[in-house]
Length: 330
Image (cartoon, rainbow, N blue to C red; front, side, top):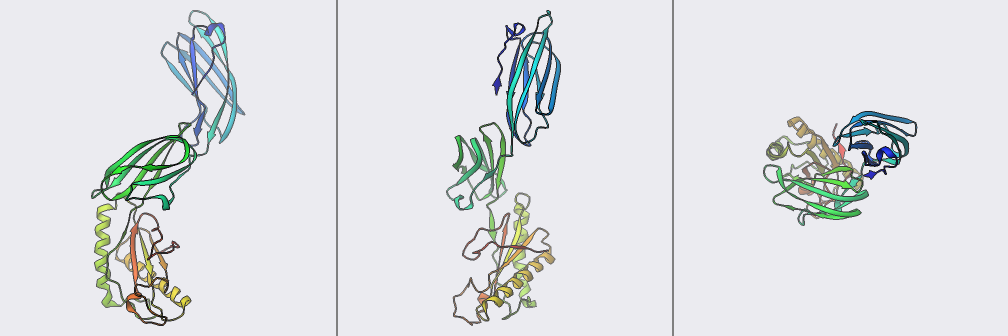
């Protein structure tokens, strides 16, 4: 906030005080001037910010406040100049020059590196492109998906800071409401929850990606887990299904990579036809991630498998999922 000096006779008794919101984020409001009346009269405000012109004519009373919004300014800094003319009810007049610089900043950019998020320790690293003043953390989860904890953290104008919170139960979502040193606010939502669906592996024939009819009951059993999870958390988390495919070591690596992708798509299409209407993503890992370690050219049925994960975001790389190159199922 800025305060302007009162410089002419009519303002000698602080007939009008002026304050300014001089810096805002684009999309979160406009710079503005507010005129606080301490006497009865009329004000006539004119102001230019580059090519834009602003005006306010207003009767004032002691205790009244009137705001002139400097709307429509593009991102960047703008030099503004003008004047406030005052005529009090007892006939006194005067002029106050107005001279200020306002700034419309890009929206506040926030991030939280995945490798710095530790749900067990209830901590993360928050990074911003502008100095931060405070963070309010709200955590949702538990059996009902409601609010299970959070906290507030005061920051001393830093652009990165470790953030911790108190919570009880499984975390589904974390909301971080950040206020920067200019008073602008932005929210970062993290959806770290994921669930690897327990299931009995569909056994594919060697070199094949077709689902054998006698293997379908295994998919039905896994579907019951998926459906129950959707019923429980589907209104809290925008769940998507991620299906990963694998092969044994029979054949060359390139052919097995393509085969694993076909297997993942086959499982994904089955779930789509079964009624999963949310996004589905697939990825193949070929013979690079073996459930059972074998030599080359080993026809091991346990390695001809798929993994199913429900998550709001692509699963983090792990032993079973060493890459994150998912392809959306049409």
